[in-house]
Picture 1 (cartoon, rainbow, N blue to C red):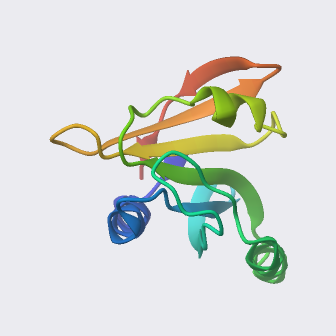
Picture 2: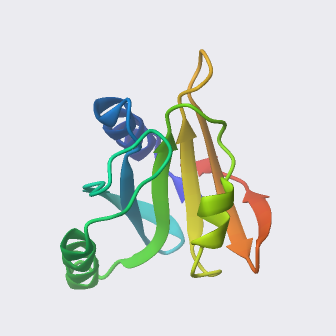
Length: 130
């Protein structure tokens, strides 16, 4: 995954704003580089669960298409657990083509990791800051 520090900072800020609950959103790319993030509402706010607002998800998809971008990742925060997909995250990983970015706030420093998940198998992917 290729992403700017500016967008990472915006994702971290979104996660901090939603504490103690999980934050969630989408990332869109062009040419293999993340160009935009979409903050979505967690309609089931909890410190260990999220559910995206379906209308906001559709609006993000529509905006991305209009901007000639492709939705390529889901991000969410883990306020109280490590930056690793939970059993629920793995179970709900519906698309093996997209990335799953997790921001963890459970350590003194914020940890960000990205994953591909296919058939219950988790594979960490590199995050290149561009």
